Amino acid sequence: MNSPSISTCGSSEHLLYRRSFLQSVLAANATLQIGGLGVAAETPTGEALRRQQKRALFIWLAGGSSQFETWDPKPGRETGGPFRPIQTAVPGYQVCELMPKLAGLMQKIAVVRSLNTVITAHEPAADLISTGRPKEAALDYPEMGVVLAKELASQDSLLPDYVSFFPATEGRRRPATGFLGGRHAPLLLENSMRPGDIDLPSGLSDLEHKEREDLRQRLSSEFGNRRAGSDLVSGYNSAYAKVRGLMRTDHLFDLDREPAATRERYGRTEFGQQCLLARRLLEAGVPMVKVARGFWDSHHDNFESHRELVPDFDNVLSVLLTDLDDRGLLDSTLVIVLSEFGRTPAINKDVGRDHYAAAWSSAFAGCGIQGGAIHGRTDEDGKTVADGEANASDVAATIYTALGIDPRKDYHVGLRPVPLAKEDSKPITTILS
Image (cartoon, rainbow, N blue to C red; front, top):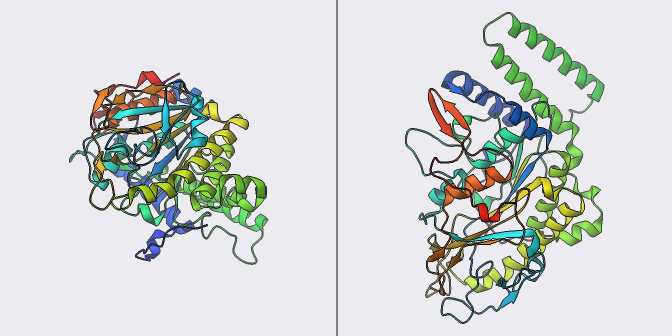
């Protein structure tokens, strides 16, 4: 699998091990005990939502993909660039010629062409899009993926609540758990397709390992029952159970179990193979998966870089959507394509496009989405939103609504009620089914 050469700090903290996974979950439970967080009690609605087994997949185009070379071409304009538009399966709607496969699947995809998210610096913009909220000094908000993991995960599942493929190219930020702590923090697979250090020690059988775990759980439960802090002990047991679940479901991360033809369809790029693995995890019951594809920050040679990136994206997303649909998973899986922002209408002296948040695009498919819906439009040069303006909070409210989650649902931090989506947010109803 080929990727442009990159350098990393090489820190061992970037690797996922069983011990670090345990530590993050246990620290989260301690945070919940000490920090005074009280999340809304479980409701029949929440239980019903989990029974529906809804799932979410974020496709994160790290660095900021160009709307001109994807969802919102401007043919014949000075801002448009060299690529032609092509007609899609939706009458009257065109995409860039670099996306012929997605053009044929537009009846399954909804596009929002009218995002105005203001912020154009990578990390603050990523925080805004990922949480749906501007930064607030008094409160650290969790990213939507963490919230979705909490809302959609089954309490008794031994699978991870959230798996995030985290390439070094996205190293400027990690998913923020915010005031929810680490209970639903993602299992980070950084430049890897499989969790590390989850094999049994040499010489220890499955039966011996189970007997040790049964004894550990019985002793810890007896300890907790006699003392204050039983919730914390329960958190320890939950953390161990999740690790044991990883160990028992290790086969999900083995792509050699997939037919060679399927692997070829997705493409032998890192992005393609990670999306295939994402499909395996979603099918097995992991409620929240994120796949990040880097190198979209095209300040130099925008057209050459998108000539390489967009066809891979076009192939992988089209195969993924078709695969999910063929397996009966698309109706229960929300697929979200987002970046930090878009790219400038102006082409700079290095034949690149810079950061632009005043008028850009995102795409959605699957659960709760009206395929073929095109919301909003930009002016003829793509410089401003001409109709249907939406912001990051509106995107968050749309995602929650599509999955059947009330965006007005309150969590509580201390005595303060905090709705999932910002109070003034509005779901983009045009694209909802």
